[in-house]
Image 1 (spheres, one colour):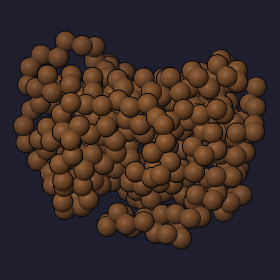
Image 2 (cartoon, helix red, strand yellow):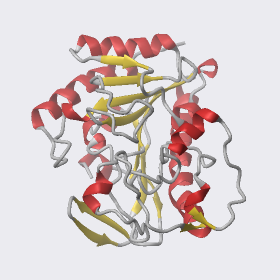
Image 3 (tube, one colour):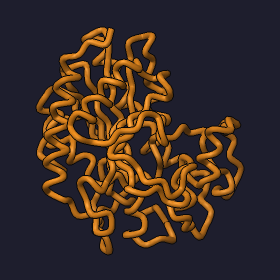
Image 4 (cartoon, helix red, strand yellow):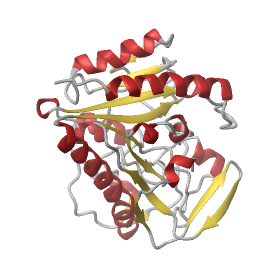
Length: 311
């Protein structure tokens, strides 16, 4: 964890041990923290739901650790390590996306994964179900390359525990940070921070094999943020020399949908960074030059947003 995350923060803890690891190895850690939330004093809130690397002992996956780690938004929390020093609220998941995806609703669940009757609501929205069919629901069924993640079914109790110990605390932290920013300033700007592979995997999106731009900025077609605010972000990144797509192929999912409401001056925007800019996608090693450039360019963006009132 970078130094900024050692500041005073609000902790959500689990009672069960987790596992942290790097490719090919894992080491047990006691009572692994699930979520870190650092309060801010500006209108900005940044969150990273997919950069977690603590693999719980109860995962029970059929895949090895290097395969599982390809699902991470690896190093995203390091890219934005500057944010808290600027007074920006920061929320970070430590549980891995492939264990539970906090950027999905609890209704986005493939019940064929469960051994037992699931009595909670399940989405019937075709757009939502397209992700579930790809194996990318709340609990992933397949990796981006189509490898089955489990050789077993999960119990109802396992799935409920993941929701209670991971999904609920993460969303509570994001909601609290946005509410606090909005209460202080009368508006909030929420950046939902992600990374994406250079080329989309076969089971990753509805556009397999697509070569991604350097950045994809998404606001669900202007429904979760002011299009003018999204355009400001796109223009800033293009001025820095990056290629940028807007709402394609990623429009934003649950975290911007749930918390973005531009009519109430609550703006939520998903920002995807191409991993080739800052890391070796095979070894997960950082590329220092690319990381430094991204940090500098994103820091100027955050400083610009900190001073921008979108009302």
